[in-house]
Image (tube, rainbow, N blue to C red; front, top):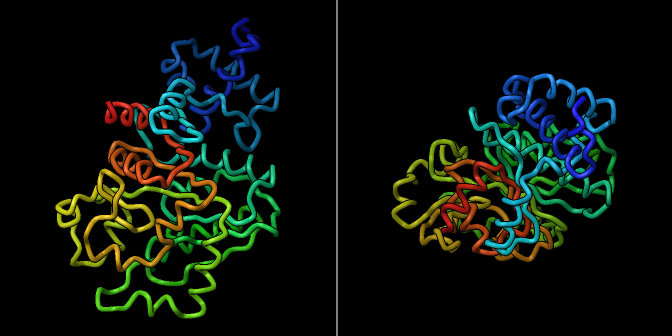
Length: 321
C-alpha cells in the first residue's frame, strides 16, 4: 500500500473522502479514482483499510470528508458559528444525499453528547435522507417537535412523516403541529391558533434546543410550491414581490425580510422571530436553485450552522463576490 495512506495528517482525510464518494455518493471505484486523480488499486486499498480500521461501519465516522477551505471562507464571509461542506458528485449532482448524510453525522454526534433534549424539525427530501443515515438510538428523553404544519401528500417527507421518522430512528418522543401548512386567506390565524392543542404545541417551540431547517425555492423542485401553496398563489406573483424562497413556509426576499404577500400571514408554523431565538439553528440545503434563499436566511439571522455541499458552497461564495 502506498505510504501516502499512512501519513498521520492526511490519511484519515483521504480514506474518509474515498469512502464518502464510494458509499454516500454511490460512485464506482473507477469513478472515485478518476475524481481524486489516483489509481483504482489505491481506491480499493483505501476502502479495505477503512473497513479494517473501523472508519466505515454503519456511518462514516469522520468530518475530515469536508472541504476545510470552503468551510472557513463561508464561516468568515457569512459570520456563522459552523459550516459543514460535504463532497458532492459533480457529474451527477444530488442535492439531498451528501447533505443529508453530513447532517445525520452532525446530529448523531450531538445526540451522543446529550447536547439537545428538544429538537425542532421542518420537512423535505434532505431530512428524509438524513433519517435513513441516522444510527438507531434509544433516547426516550428527547422530543422531536414539528415546526410547521403539514400536507396530506408526500407522506414520507412532509412535516408529519419527518417528525415521526426522526423519532422512530432515535427512539424518541415526537409532537406534531397537527394543522395544514396554510390557512385560507379568509381564516383568522390568531383565532385558529388560540385552540388549546395549538397553544401547547407553540409553547414547545419556545424551548427548543436546536432547530433543523431546510430551504425552499420558487421552482417546481420545491414540494411546497408544487403541492402545498394555495392554487391561486404562483411563483411569478411571489417573485414579483421579491421572494427568493421560503423558510418554514415564510417567503423571504434577498435581504431576508418577509415579503408583503398574504401567504405569509396564512402560514401555520413557527414564527421566524421566535426561530431566531433558538440556541442552535442548522440549515441543511444544497443546489444552485437554493443559493439565494440560503443567503437570505443567513442574512435574516435564522442560521448558526450551515450544512451544504462543495458545489453549492462555491456558488454561494461566487454570489457574494
